[in-house]
Image (cartoon, rainbow, N blue to C red; front, side, top):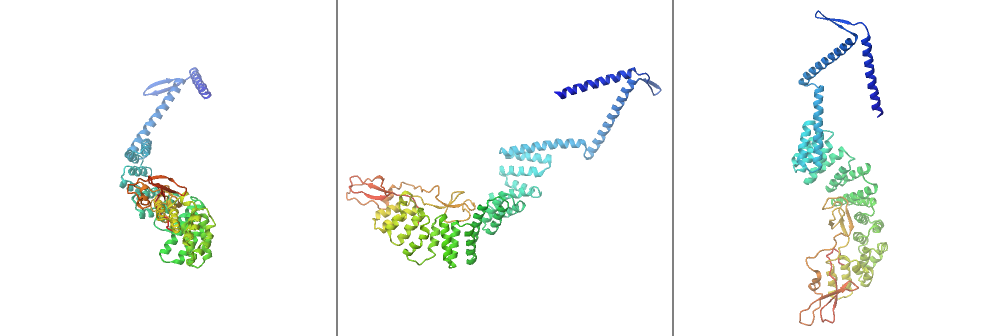
Length: 506
């Protein structure tokens, strides 16, 4: 508001000044005589001032017209002029509008519209580094992979867009399943931008998939160096790669190098079960039994596992069952309440034919938290104690439907693996296998498992010739079910059927 008031005051002052000057000129005597073609004009002071202003305006206008004519001639000649700059700005504005419309169409999923807008923007802007990427992504959206590949290859010619072109081609090859070409492209992209996290992950996964463990360890080191991976995660994954490298060395027939690689993997991650088992076997082969025992004991503290027990048994392969039970106390006393410890101790006592001790070691594991392995061990205990065949078959029948227990499960796609591998066989993810109970641990049978006791002969023959109707009563305290035939005084106790498992028979 103050500025408006100032402008108004300034305008009044200018008008007053002009009026004052005009009145001053009108009151001034004298004049100027101008002769043009034998004609004289007498101009007073005011008229002279006005004529001078008109003359200046006319000269300025003539100069502008001459400049416009010169610019038009230069424009027609192809030189840069104000006119050409005007049309360039207009074309640039339309080009950026088309580029913006293309981006919006791409975000909206309208691939054909995005491609058309990108083509128009390319004609108007002549900026391929901006329009080619939209064209490539739009071509992929509409399924024109050949067009997308051609555009990505054009991006390779410019230093500013080379990484984008390589990355686009890399994703195309991954989608096509051409991992060999994808690996080369990933190496090229990594060389262009070693700090790019996504490229590091892609390269690491491809190198692991191609068993290039040495290259994968270098990539892993680069991730640690550039701060894209915590140090503890790097240490664990480096151990996985070292273990995988050791397995390859074993296949190539170099036991000494394999032993050193396995020991290195165990040093990097003592809780990595396959590394601990392999390192222990390396120490056993080198007759360093104390080192093998120490490695397995430390791994057992972190996670009891059957592979660790198997490796521990190889330390003294010719010992008696009683001696083995005594030696295994090194492991069994560490985590006595763990299910794996209970099953291990039960198996050791079964091997020693001490079935009451095996039953005490197993406890209520077969009924409170049954797995195929614990139920199978229970069947072996019943057989060893002389139980009826129906009881043994009942426990084995139950093993058909109970959980299979912990297994190597991919945390990414939940695929179950029979053995540990550094790379998931299903989704290709690296270092995602964990020893855990699968989410879908139960097996769905095509028909009711209530008939299984009849199939395996668990129901004793009744003396009466009449047809029998079997009624199921609730489970007893020991996890068995009492199947009762009507009007039958003595019913036989049989275990309730359950799921297929991969437990080891005792």
